[in-house]
Length: 131
Image 1 (cartoon, rainbow, N blue to C red):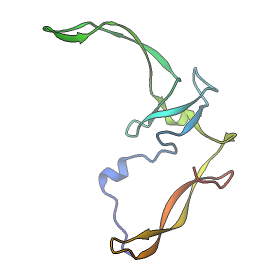
Image 2 (cartoon, helix red, strand yellow):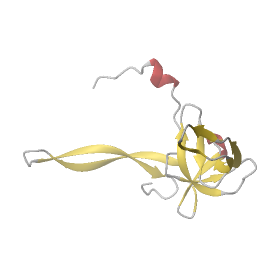
Image 3 (tube, rainbow, N blue to C red):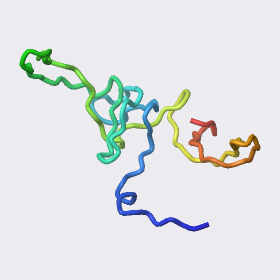
Image 4 (cartoon, helix red, strand yellow):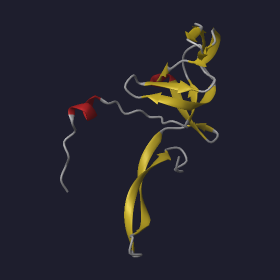
């Protein structure tokens, strides 16, 4: 099996321990102890936006678009990103670390024949269950 060299872009892109949709617990900052679901992952900045955590108020201007419907001004409350080191993955009834495991799967070709292949799945190190 040939080993592919990582490109310059791949080497710079950080690997994060959480993904969009994961439930996390905040372990540092003003919202310490709060839990929420990850809405968005900002991989290059190593930050995540967690639902209901680190809420800020944004002041927006009235934008007139010359007869068309413009945006109304006011104060909007929204979530701000927090650093990924300040969140911990929560799975089931407690916090956990993650690992990877190879699982055999059966795939079907267009002609109807089947073959087995493996794929990598994320698992909880504490329970061994797939996340």
